[in-house]
Length: 292
Image (cartoon, one colour):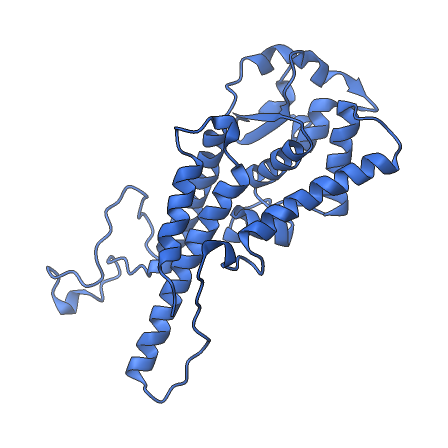
């Protein structure tokens, strides 16, 4: 009863979302990355079901481990307990919490006050934190980060951008060394570095990395900021996907040291291999879910 069409539908929706026929500013980072997660979940679920069917075929007396999954549409497919529309609504809810925080303070919509409210909701009320070491894939999927409240730097930046977009505030970003920095779009970048209440606006948005002397961000000024190449929405999605590729490849090849991303994979049932050679440790035995 599993609907394998979900895998293709996820990819098709992702492709349409990032289509070059669309203006970059109209691309939803949240939708694109949720479609990535949906395709991965559908792919892994398909392989789980194939495994279960294989067990049943081999051992007829074994009962089915779980109920068959039947998704009649991608929008109804569960991702971490919620559907794609519900995860998008979660971002809407965060934006409304920021608006409520501004109302409760009885203040206007000055840029600094808005960003301080965003930080308060995201990093104090919601408790989002940056994962120091990326070893768990859940830190690199948007729905998992919203659920576990711990994620990679690029995913936290994407959440920040999406929340501010819902507040009518444009946030841009760029790679700086190992970090991805974001800041509000402004015609006067030097204003971002003026210190008020002990912090610059640039530090309010990007946190401690701006004040860390080991980070390239600590040396940025209004002038050098103008020299950075602003990442497009497609660039940001590309960074998130590149992180996923590296993470999953590292996990999939961990038993085969030296197997690089550019190395060709050998089939488990290679017709050219003699049966007694298939037990050799240099033959990568990679399960499909390891190569999502």
